[in-house]
Image 1 (spheres, rainbow, N blue to C red):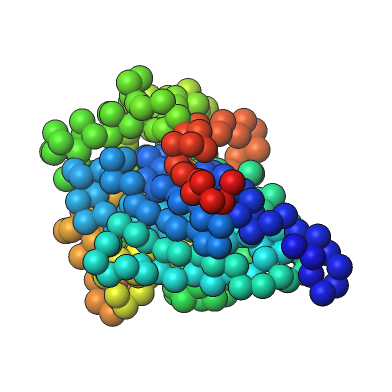
Image 2 (image 1 turned 90 degrees about the vertical axis):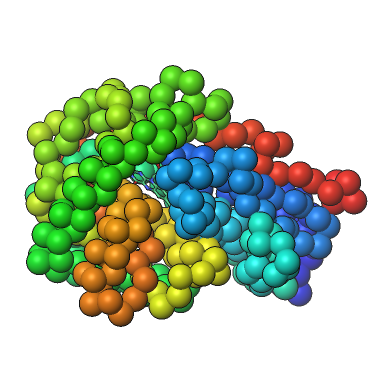
Length: 334
Ligand SMILES: Cc1cc2nc3c(=O)[nH]c(=O)nc-3n(C[C@H](O)[C@H](O)[C@H](O)COP(=O)(O)O)c2cc1C
């Protein structure tokens, strides 16, 4: 395609396929990558792939939807960096709830340096379970992330010191509840242990080699990894929560888009990000988190933001499924 300003773009079908490829790097619960793309000549369809769902951990598919929302936003970022403006239609087929979204190119836009930086951040972004150092996250950094989440339609709240104390209790309750459920433990082991499905799950390089000395306890995967965590803690970390008024599929998908947007920007700010979803997965602790938000809203995801200890090496990248396992190209789009 040639735009009115004379810029050349690859054809829409190729750009859609490239976007589905970029979206492979999106974060997902236990690195399950529970999405499937269908690339058509004039649209890109996102489906939930429930063969990689977590029925024990995530029976309501909330975290599956957040993960798919993050993949959706990654695809949008890729198309913007190709110089394409897009429209996203969430849940386009009410009778097929697994059809999560349709992305359609609506026109050409200039390729900006900001769009290029954002798509480059996709390659750099990762989950960081190393404790943080005594360098606080600034109010300006949080304000920027709040604006970015707001632009996606999902408010972001920075927890006060008292609310972080409540979070410590909620996380500890969630940990106890998960430890008492053999089904949950078996599911976690499947995605983090040696027999995790190829191209998915958490390898030992991203799991701490010992329990970090943080006030808010990190998720216990039931296995020790090889990620050196040192003696850092989380005293200078900032905890934020993405929230909203609705508890339906569209809201959780949107939360995932917001998660991707703020995580990519936090990456550009040099901040380490760690999601805490266990308190949201478990009904009782989700209710506790709701109370922390004064019962006014539905909490979608808690995130720790901080500056990672530069003395310890970055965690490696988690693996990804090959393109063909997460996307199908309609023959007419080849
Ligand atoms: C919805 C969601 C929930 C997550 N919850 C947790 C969590 O509770 N604890 C944790 O250590 N990581 C959590 N993660 C991070 C994933 O494990 C991580 O995204 C995945 O392993 C891929 O690794 P990467 O982010 O480094 O690319 C979560 C990610 C998503 C998208």
